[in-house]
Image (tube, rainbow, N blue to C red):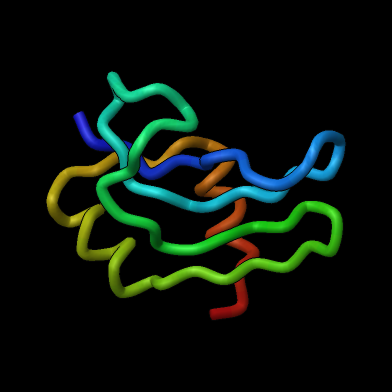
Length: 76
């Protein structure tokens, strides 16, 4: 199953996240199928490619609850 989820990046105690498309059996920081955006919780900066996300959702990918929340508040 394919999921749209967050991949943690950044330094210790200063996380940033990439919004990625991954297989559910891949570990959190493993190799993604595709990167579709990023989220910085410290500055509340959100950048997403809605075209690619909608394309993957139509193909049957599931978004995690956190990603759904981020997409809801993105201004793209």
